[in-house]
Image 1: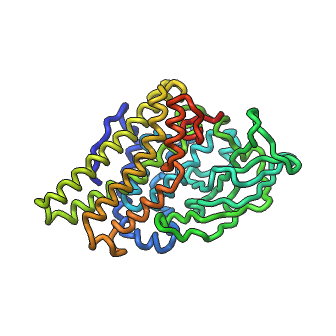
Image 2 (image 1 turned 90 degrees about the horizontal axis):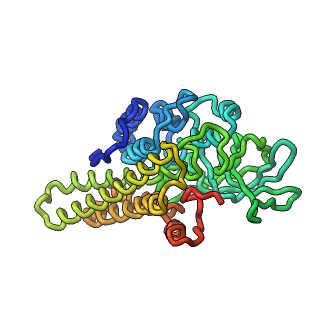
Image 3 (image 1 turned 135 degrees about the horizontal axis):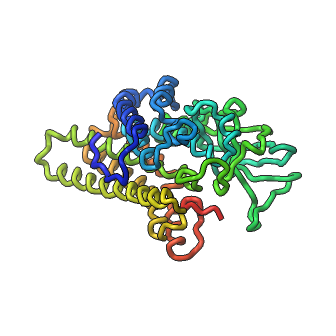
Length: 393
């Protein structure tokens, strides 16, 4: 995996170095099994266990729990290394490793009961598409959600839902319908096998249904309320930070592959220009992602708050994420054209990467809604998707 390393603000802790090294060691094996993963439309059980053994799902758990508590920068490096091997594995690792992040928004005693192992994975859709009726002690949760990435191997499923009382919507202080996130054991969730897609086929991002399941009050969370350990990883947008790792890992893999396959045309002008242009774009994009993450971490570890970032620094976080997705898709497309007919056959990883990057760019973090939100924030307007900026009100 050829990388131009970004400068660090502090030495890499031992736990971070170990998990990153394990992820890098897994990458070649994942590449060998990419066709199998894609055909299965979910991660094989043994690969899930390899991720657990590597410490991927536990990487966000606090040191006070015995976890490695990797920084957002380190978590991004882990996911990037896995995505270099296989995009669907990187995607599921990115989603599944949120468990330790969610724990900070729960009461510590409750979270420790829910997560007796630090290697438990989560999945689910955070947007409130379900409904939760208030009952004594908690809620009755009902709904159908899409995009449960990694749900076939998850231990807990987290889902967004609007809150109701006696069938009527509750409203927050602003008068908008109130919602929160609900954590349900995987065995109380029905998986609906809808995941027949262009790309990221191996992520198993199926629809799922929850029917009138009781969720205790203490198994719900809001990103604006930290009930556990505070700090840089207890912030409203923390679950989005490592997302650009997937497109960055795929773009790097595609470039390394194209360079190796085009070695016989080292003096071809078209090859030279395309490779150099793609390398320039990837380097600039990756630098933007890590620079935004490093600056944010410096402030939050200060300790400070997201409000201590300048408007430009705060907007750089969602913008660099979006740019990583769109640039990766552009790079893979140009390399696909460079390789011409040799890229069109399914055994070619460029064909899979083309489909993977096009599919991942349909996620909200790569959509124009992010541009509108960042632009509105910079101009003093109203962001449509406030959470991407860490805003909860």
